[in-house]
Length: 369
Ligand code: SMG
Ligand code: MG
Image (tube, rainbow, N blue to C red; front, side):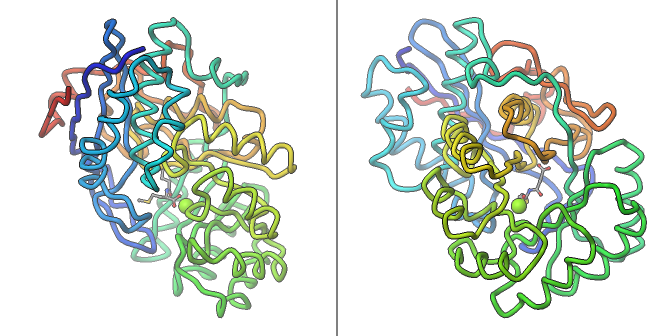
């Protein structure tokens, strides 16, 4: 496939309710979508997971657009005939920017797989046709409001609950939710780096709630701090922000900093690197699960195909489209039935765009050639 043109499309979509984490509150998403045009009529879409501000990781959506235009697209255009599997190597000389790289690899994969009348699940060698679905619940103003939200998700049938935590919103909310949902339902927490090594004793107080895992309590760079917590606590430590490649994954496992790995294709530079991380975790007997970045139906479909790999033994943050969106930009938004999401069985990344809705939420489109 020869890259011919690239459409950069920005959409703004309101969330159905505010989503607050330890690093901030979101009421909408400003998302960059990529449309890949190959020289022989191939066409595909990718979704960039970067947020508006560099508060989750160093990338942010305006910066991604610049990097794509000035550095990534010119290199791919110059490379001539390529496959999607070549893209990571072609872009290897560019330091960092995994979310930008993942987005373009995703658009190329969608185009290539559709042209070959196959899909990402088969390309990755995944076999499952349904996967357990978890939901991520933000920090709420009061415990009563949190319990009302969690109760609603339990009624919708989710297979596990994840609570966002931060200092002063941890022990008591987790205790209240554990009491509400009972001892058997899967429960985990995510701190998005809000704690430090000095908090290890405090975090060990979460052990009594029988959590599946605690996700990224400390800074992205602090593998030793995570290893110390893992040694002190009975709750498995899971890394999210720290895991930016297969190499950092291998190091984190060897150091004892992670007993569980959250794989987000955007954060690690793409679906193919995600596959490599999955494989090395399976070899090391480390469970993995697929994270989420409040994706539209594009990213949600692709993530479901990735999570169909056997090593994804824990429920992912692949919730129903309606968890975040009143109306998605795809024709067949993902739903949750009996706590599971059906893995799409359709070409490419497995979605079909609702072009009317896509046009409605688009506020800017540019074409690179
Ligand atoms: O897509 O369900 C989703 C969101 C899951 O909590 C979620 N993501 O750290 O894992 C995480 C966060 C990152 C995004 S917060 C804006
Ligand atoms: Mg996380």
